[in-house]
Length: 190
View 1: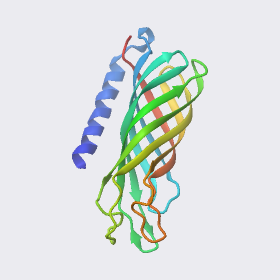
View 2: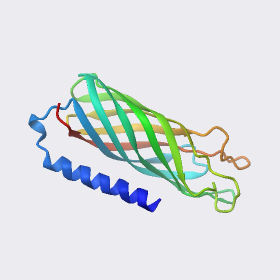
View 3: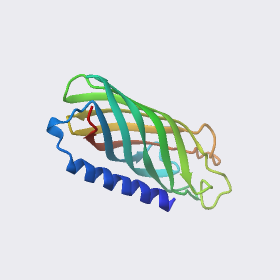
């Protein structure tokens, strides 16, 4: 797990360095790499309190208003105590298709990521429980935001659906959060 976090951190630093080396005014924005950070509150907050994450995506503007691509990243959920259960931290690594609609060159946009969310971390839901955490499930991340040529600011809901896996008594296993994000667009040329 530590190696995975180090790799994500290194990739973010590399992408940031690449972004500062680019002169974006003359480069086509049809293909781009999107690098961002996000954070939010776990909803509902039974086994986790909050999350922080890094986002990485590739997007191709099929038309000036519609983008398709792939998205991944890492979202860390912070476990919390709940009715005597010491819930463990866990992470979600999505592998998803990216869909975006941009009504104008700058302004409000709508989108979603849809795919599979791999849940990683401790094998148990809670440190004082024998119930195994789920391995993953359907991943959905609808969002609304503001964009310009270089930046994206979002309000989003992310959820990995795990059905009844990881449930302990009346505590459902939740891998969902309502949050805010900021991302930077790195043009990749034509």
